[in-house]
Length: 516
Image (cartoon, rainbow, N blue to C red; front, side):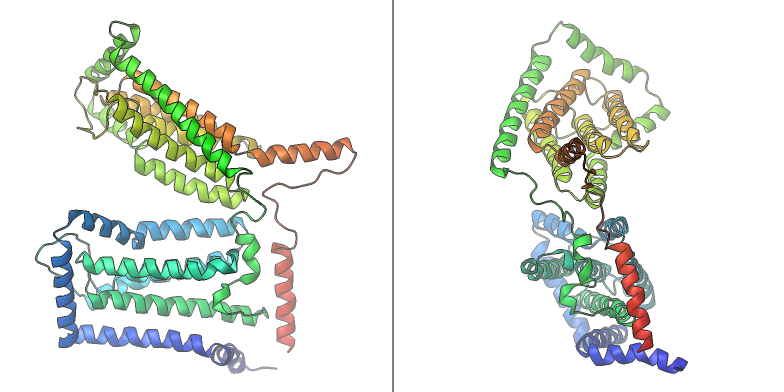
């Protein structure tokens, strides 16, 4: 019987013998970070001079160009915690939906570890942020190491290792290159914005690479001890899970005739814009003395006369439900989850085109009609866009109506009716809040309604987001007519050999490894 020490030495032996190159890289990055940490703590003069001269040079280069600062801040946000947490959380939920618990656990451990390393080391070192002549950005907390550099290399690297098997081989090098460019760009922007020294970013990269290597090779150790084959990291952590984690493995093409579909969508956009422009000009400049004109003046004035502090607060948050950030957040949550559940790109394309078309139609028609806001006090202050149509209402309506159209035919669970409730209640709440706050007329609401019905109607006819459901119903009907058992080709169907079969294979291989 093997002793405890032999059992503990066995995985370490495998690690050292079969992963010597990887072990050297992990050890080298760890040692490099330790040396850099010691030099920063000792305030080694050459490093001190290089850090301050680099910070001053970047500040002189960047501070004169406001547009460049905006671009740098946008690139820097790719390594910020909000985007990192969103990416990892969505990936974890998607993997759990696809029954890939091991990969989900790997992402959780790797991400949580990075979140713990960053603040603890910053507190330990206690290095202050750079002080430059013309500050162009600010950041809270201490400086060493760079959390953006650490988080970006860990998050993007871990996601790359998990999802590499889902990519075709010819795209894997491109994906690795894109991740490397993003990580490098995030680190350089932190230096250029004057919120980190050069050594902070280098330390973040080294520590992130070391932690990523430790977790990746720990995962490989687990595979070896389970008796599963270990392939190069260039093939990902779990190569055999490639089909399960692929976004849409059963979808041959998104649209059968993409060029025709593009032409139809563009034609529909032009027609919808024409209808919006005609309606907007009519209610804005040619409805004097009509019922529409009376309603457009009476409703905002009535709301303005009945304002209270409590209603001001309620309307503020109801209005926020239709702003760009809220709409984008819901879209960025729904689309990955829809892809994970339904394994089809077409519903995601439908929602993406819905929201992109809504935004462009709103901006174009608002600029063309150029309708003034209601003549009452505006609680949201001056806005850069005109009154017709309401962008908040149109975005809210398009989003929730599109979600309801996608969800309703795909499940028979009771909660599907919540999407219908949201498609009705959310636009009404946003519309009431926007008119209460003096930002829109009732006919602006009507314009948003026209935009939603016309644009979603165009996309429904062109994209046909639920086409595979009709195809499945047709096949089942044909099978029943022939007296054959119906085929189960639902997009949620999981290959029978995937989860249960792999778990059983794991157990058999583990028993074989222990007997050896």
